[in-house]
Length: 276
Picture (cartoon, rainbow, N blue to C red):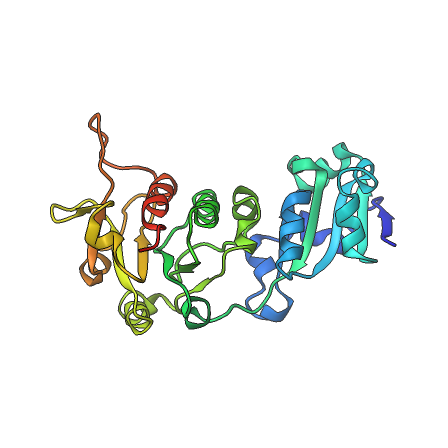
């Protein structure tokens, strides 16, 4: 049975996770075993639970306890369930709740790149993607279009930021992911060495004179391929491009020179996610 708690005091410390802690405070890098994140909406919470993440508390409109969140409530057991009408929740959190349901959940220790990529054949490598919306959209494309894993360079934003989780529709809990190193200097040289040790060929998505088309037969025939995508404005660094085995472009028309990184990821994953 849920432990239903009516919200009467906005300053209650139990509500800090929803109302006052920043994303960086939730990560809790000083004590990572107690790091948290927020999952929003019943579908996303279900995917997080399916992925083995442990719920800490719930926050929702009263009507959802026996309504659209009833299965979430049943799966979460007797954790605290904070409730109030939607206007009160909006005042508390500072934004309208998507479908009126939030869940605070424990983070899990991240696996190594070697662990999640050992049996993978198509992976995405994200260099310095800082926009949570783009990151979430890339994860959704990765899940839908055949990527076995996602690796992030140390400067990428956190896939478990609330907006990333929401935009991904919870696919961040379905596609294995981890960081390719802990420090900025771990990329690209050390990261590329790790990819080569795993027998991956690397494809830099970049606009260069020597770029091959995304449907190039040699590229399509690679047994193990890592698709490397760069930050929203500047794209991949010159050093990263130089270290990759291929430089790849998506053919354009009407004078358009490039796509947003999230859109480009969908095209690249669709084409290159096919296995030889």
